[in-house]
Image 1 (cartoon, rainbow, N blue to C red):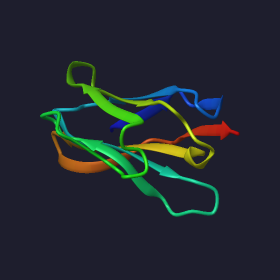
Image 2 (cartoon, one colour):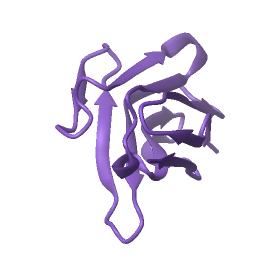
Image 3 (cartoon, rainbow, N blue to C red):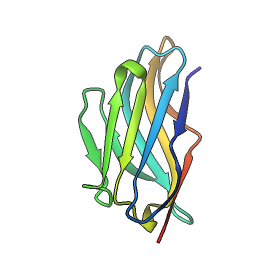
Image 4 (tube, rainbow, N blue to C red):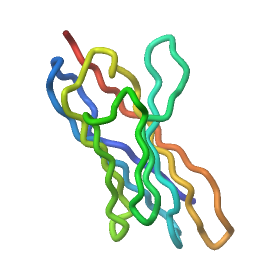
Length: 119
């Protein structure tokens, strides 16, 4: 079984920074795409950013230039450095990864970590 565990959420004032981490554990052969999603109050879940196993990245327009996604393949860990945070970034942030095990590939989600940005 594969588990994704996020950490690093919290409360910060507008303009501040937070760094989220997501670590995968279990019988992992490799991890392909990894991504961060978020769901704000009363909103649908949306893609924030993704990173391929080779390090190519993509960002939502709303976070470009402020957020940076990265990963450490040796540690099965992904990060999201969030700078210049805005109140509209307030959301539960979820880690997502396509993980290949001995049973094949599947999509996994973390439990979510709350980020609250006050004005």
